[in-house]
Image (cartoon, rainbow, N blue to C red; front, side, top):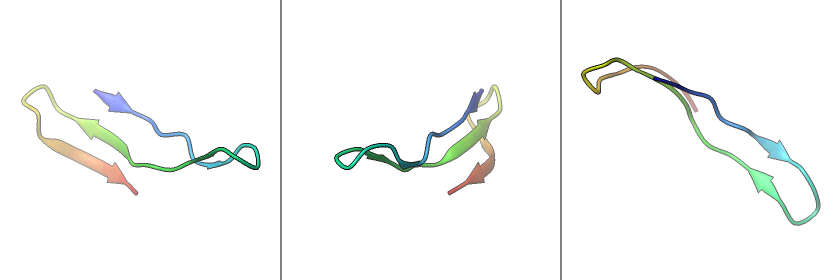
Length: 34
């Protein structure tokens, strides 16, 4: 699974943050960008 993240300030009231992850078929996180 590749789970990208959306980050940044979009409007004055909305800001996103999170992690981007790469997870193998067994559930192990093999890559992460905070």
